[in-house]
Length: 365
Image 1 (cartoon, one colour):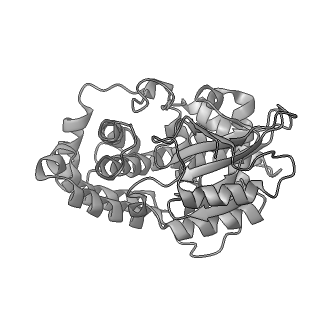
Image 2 (cartoon, rainbow, N blue to C red):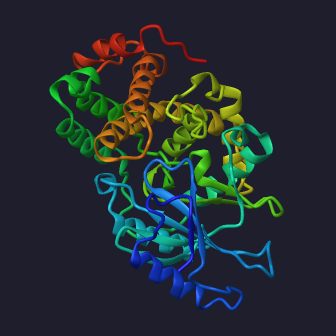
Image 3 (tube, one colour):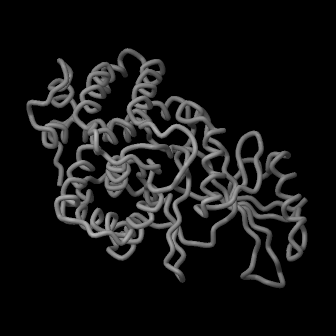
């Protein structure tokens, strides 16, 4: 069995996975030897490990067969139900969204390899690409997905907070201000929830690495649906804007640069493209209201990924400084909260303490 691997530590694939790959490759006439594969690790993943599996073909050098293998990260069942995620994956595939599911094994799954380019951090700032992403988000939010259509954000935040406290020492709970966050979540839910807010099926993790684009057709595909659920669309927009501060392909992928956070003009341009992508006439007030709502939901987004970082630091072995990432997210929450909600909107006791602890000396552009 010829295996060339740059990904798996011991140079071998799990037997269960190998059986799936060989069976799959045996159905392709242009694969000379189903057992002869190459494995390449794909960088940038922080929840799972992702590999590209290649069957070289000497006769057609540019037409290799490829699939993508996703090895589930340790402890990810804390964040989401894997069976629910697979059902979402299959339903989205039925809707023509994303790659096809080709096989499952105990520690992961095999997906169709999309022959498209994964976007870079810089791509998110390109006006043409940004417009395409906005239109794709609008399409994604409009999908008719099965299951509960209630907002998931607040219950998920509370569940993650309980888990983070259980995993942390008393010193860490104090260090990250976790005891104050019950009140903060309650405050945000009260301040941000509106009776007429639009609820859609949200990706909830729309960083550049989860967006692919076909260079020829300029079609955009959203991938990786672990955190997808029904939520206010303003929250998903807020998440995307917040991700513009990140570049996960540097020597310090955990470091966030909030000078790169999109200014109001850029956020407004994106949301205008988002709202008009379906061909409807949109008034300025609709754009302005959604810009404002997205900025408010950025606060919930900082808590969301801050808690994710704390939990991940305790359960995941991927080489990423989760705790420092979490610290930066909490810093931004305390810094931005009085600027977005006003200086007098403070949860009982904790708000002023948290702000002084985390935000002193920070700047925001």
